[in-house]
Image 1 (tube, rainbow, N blue to C red):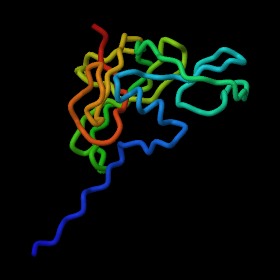
Image 2 (image 1 turned 45 degrees about the vertical axis):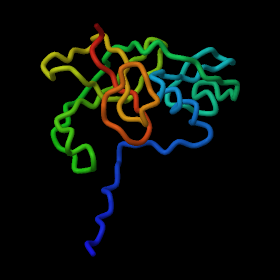
Image 3 (image 1 turned 180 degrees about the vertical axis):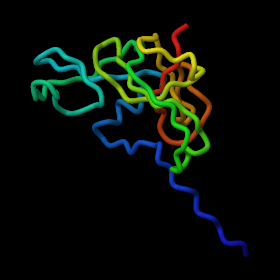
Length: 152
C-alpha cells in the first residue's frame, strides 16, 4: 500500500467564524460587504464588531460598490508559502474603496507596467465553492476572496 501524502497547507484561505460568515457568504455570491457605523457614519474594512473610529458597537453590514482606486502596490517575485509560490509574480496592493476604507488585496488581470497610482479598479473574486457570481476567477477551494482588476 502506498502511503498517502498529506495536502500542503494553504496560507491564502481565511478561517470564517460566526461573526464574519455574512462577509464570506456574500463574497461567494460575488458581493463585497463593508461595515458601517450607525454612530459616526464611517465605513470600515476589515469586518469588526465595533467601529474602529468611535468604538461604537452600532455597526451593520452594507454592500460595497466594488469600485476602488489603487493606492500602492508591490510586485511579489518570491513567496515560498503554498499556494503563493505558484502565483509569482503577483501584485500585492492596497486600494481605496469608493466608500472610504482602505483594503489590502491583490490586483489581477493587469500587466505590471500598466499599474498606476489612482487607477480605477473593480472587485472580482478568487476561489470559493462555486456558489459565487460576479466574475469570480477559477481557482477553487475554500472561501471566495476579493481581488481587484482594472476597471472597464
